Image (cartoon, rainbow, N blue to C red; front, side, top):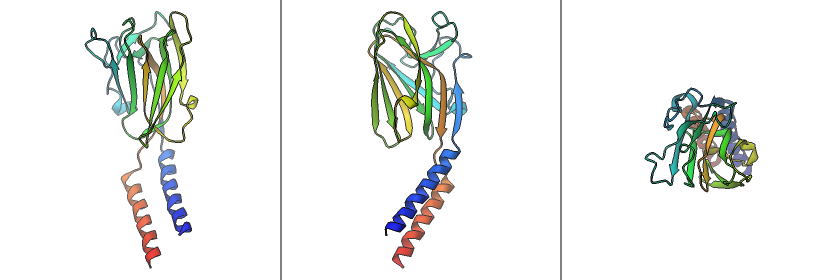
Length: 205
């Protein structure tokens, strides 16, 4: 029995390894996006990623992320994705970055935020669980541009989505580098199912 269970686990691992082997890396910035453009699902077909967000501000009509020109703050960077234009008082905001299919094997990006605001990051994992982390405010005035890497948050499971929340003031992300791990193909899953059924029948014989 133990040998048979181990064999099934090995088959599952082989399917997972095959899926990981076909993982693809893509880069995304917003340099070619017009200032003020609402960002949602424009990058599904090319980068396999969906953006969404919320903004606690009654004076802003759209809560979706908006591309905003930040060149006046960071000369080396032209466009950052933000949850609303900069200067929306102390409105709390959130930004969600989600894999349209499969999950993220890795996800790195720049975070722009006010120096007096904490950032809360929630990872939604492929098993449905959530891991939360706090990036404390550096203090002072002005804006901070910081590179965030998925290596900063250790998890043994793939990440389905990342949600970023702040305590007030707007923030954004830019220069995303993403590795996607696709869902196992139908044929791979079917083959795995047949092998498991065959193993079960041999046990019963």
